[in-house]
Every structure is written in C-alpha cells, then in structure tokens.
Length: 465
Ligand SMILES: Cc1cc2nc3c(=O)[nH]c(=O)nc-3n(C[C@H](O)[C@H](O)[C@H](O)COP(=O)(O)OP(=O)(O)OC[C@H]3O[C@@H](n4cnc5c(N)ncnc54)[C@H](O)[C@@H]3O)c2cc1C
Image 1 (tube, rainbow, N blue to C red):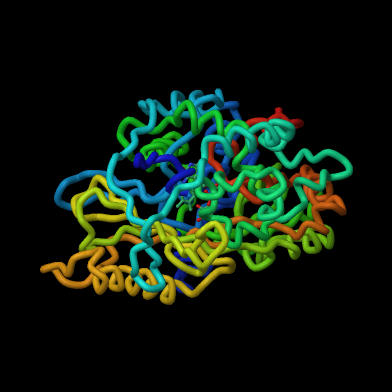
Image 2 (tube, rainbow, N blue to C red):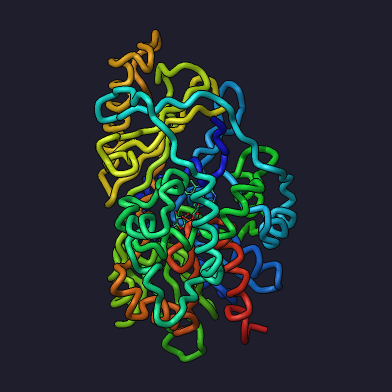
C-alpha cells in the first residue's frame, strides 16, 4: 500500500485567540489607509494580499492566529528539526498559478513524495482488526466517475452551475455512487465531508473533479522542504509591515464623510486600529457567528445563515504503540462501504517523525475539542487492548500537536442549491466594495482557491488605479 502525501489520501483549535481586553483601547496610531483590506490570512487571503501588493496596491491582511497559513500546520520536532506537515500536504501539478505563486515566493517544489508501508483495517469503535477486507476496485470506478465529472469541469473554476442545476449534482452522493456504480471512489474521497453519503454530489465534485483525478494519476507537487509553512512564512516577509496577526475585526462601516472608504476597526495586540480601505476582501468562513461586527445587509445574512458545516481535526500523536510504518484505517463492516461511524478517527498514519502518527478525525457537525481529543486517545488505547498496537514503555498515547479546522465544508441543502443559492451568493461580489473568496465561495483546496482568487483580482482592483 502506498500512502500519497496527497490531501486526497490524507484527506485545526479554531484559533479564536482571546485578545486581551487590556488592549481594547485605541492604539493611538493614525488611521491606516489602504487600497485593500483583506480579512483572513489562510490560503486565499495570503494569496490575495501578495498578488495585490505585487500589482502595486497597498494592502493590510488581518489574521486572528499567530501566523499566516490557515489550514497549513507544520510541527517541528525539537530534537530532530524535521518539519512534519499535518495539515495541508500538497498542491495540484497542472494549475499554472500554483507554480507562479511558489516561484514568486522562491519556494523550491517538486513531485510529492509517498510513503510505503503496511495498512491495517480496524474498527476503532472496538479496536478489532477487520479480517478478509477486500478493497473495492478504485481504478475502474475512478475512470467512470471521471467521465461524469468531466462534464462539470467549470465547477473547478467556481460555483458556475448549469441552469437548471442537474439532478446528478443535487442527489446525495450515496445515490450518485449507486447510479453510476462507482463505489470504488468512496475510499479515495470520504474524509472531511462528514456524512458524505448524504452530501449533495456537487460538493464532492467541487473538490474531486476531473482535475483532481488527473493529479491522482499523474502526481501532485509539494515543497522540497516538505514544510508548507515555508510558503506562508515567506509570504509574511513579502508583506512585512502589512500583516496584523492576533487580530480580528470589531466593526466595518462605510465612512460617514462619503469619501468611498470602508472603515474597518480591528482589535490588535497594540489596541484598536482603524483601517480605511477602498476595497474589502473577506476570506474567512462566512458564518454569521464568525462575522460579528461586519456590516452585513439582509442578503448576506439570509445567504450566510444557510451554511451548515462539519468538524475536521488533525493531530500528531506519540506513544501509539503501532509497529513502524503501519497505518490504521478506521473500517466498520456494519456500515455501507465499510465507512466509519462518525464522529470518529478516520485514520492513523505514520509520519517521518520517529514514533509520530498523524491522526485525522471527522464529525458530521462541529464537536467540542476536548471530546475529539479524548475519543482519539481512547481509539488508540483500544488498539492496544486488542494487540494491533503494543503497550509502550513510554506510556499512554499523547498529543504532540492538535489543530481544529472546524467549521469545515460549508454547504447548503440541495433545495437551496436548486433555487439558485450560488448565483445569489456570487451576486454579492463587489457590493459595498466588498469581495469574497475562500473555501465556502469555491472549494476546499489551496490550488483551486489560488486560481479562483487570481481570477477575482481584476474585479477587486478595478477602479483602484
Ligand atoms: C487536515 C487538512 C489537510 C488538507 N490538505 C490539503 C492539501 O493537501 N492540499 C490542499 O490544496 N488543500 C488541503 N486542505 C484544504 C485547504 O487547506 C483548505 O481548503 C484551504 O486552506 C482553505 O483556504 P481558505 O483561505 O478558505 O481558509 P483558511 O486557509 O482556513 O484561512 C482562513 C484564515 O482566516 C482566519 N480567520 C478565520 N476567522 C477569522 C476571523 N473572524 N478574524 C480573523 N481571521 C480569521 C483563520 O485563522 C485562517 O488563517 C486540507 C485541509 C485540512 C483540514
């Protein structure tokens, strides 16, 4: 068995950092005036900021966390100095903006590396090994699935849906699998979707379309350093004084004096900063709960209020007791397609850090972090009681790193898609000089998001010269 480092196979504590109330006083600085203020320093926001600055516009990037990168998580072993990516792994090899962006940041890249090893199928609810497991024929299924997906390649550029929306895209993915006899694809793509069999097929195709299949067969690319944080550290240097970390928006408003600027009040470690920007780019998950203080109109509230989300978590654990180079895939033979019963661990996969395993966990809806963590540790302990893992001299399994990327997979029900949700969502672009990018507006994939953001730049920059 080969584990691609790809996200497809390896399919974060939302860092709502408590900004000290001690800093809630005005910083005393002058208001900052910028062409564009960008909210959220993950894949989309960092890309937008670097590109707009390169195009000659002044920018400020606001990020709540202590670094840029969003779903990129890199752990560096204190002894060995080996970086281990346990969030974003790799990028698409056939999308030109990916290479341009990596080159711009002087990042060495090449084909993604895979790891070889043994795979154990076990039911992590019981810790029991699944015997006589036969893998479905993924190759045939991928070919057939790819033929249908090719009809919707526009989706890889955005939510550009045919009108009326085809039934294939609206039907639950479980029904689509049966219709096209493609159950072999499920194990390639099931992680990160929550209850994938009930998700409208649209969401699977948005990420897992013909382009993803091309990359699956021809290989993804990754950083030579195998350290995805390198991309965002270098981007932070390029943006230097124009990034505000540990910061969040307190309010946004069109300025009263009618000069066409948007006033964005930001709580930063230095106090309350005021940014006056000609355009605003929002890249953070557009949930009403995450947009407190934003000047939302009724359309935004109605649309954003319809999003549902799932829980998706990744971590690095030591003392698992698993034999070297052994991965455990959670497999429940009582379920259709042997899928695990969520919430649960999806998989436990060895990393290049000695004794460190990446554990991915999913749930159909966001879960308290403590219950995710205790379920992960209990699942590993069960493997020790059944002998799949050994009892370790160093003792109990322990987290070395943990990240919640929740809310993940923002979706709306099939009825809303059918009634034109995405046309209405895209109609928000440019209203009140505000633009949107990010996964909810396109797809859960950095490469696709960089391209989507690139395509949006002419609209964002229009009128700024
Ligand atoms: C475990 C895992 C593995 C993955 N592997 C891959 C992979 O190999 N390849 C790939 O292409 N994709 C991968 N993805 C998916 C990909 O990373 C995401 O789709 C992508 O990062 C989404 O980009 P974004 O800009 O929408 O959001 P993010 O990258 O999440 O960025 C949003 C940023 O906004 C910040 N933020 C949120 N709310 C606020 C607020 N109120 N105020 C200020 N800041 C805020 C967040 O801290 C974050 O930094 C993976 C995801 C996970 C969870």
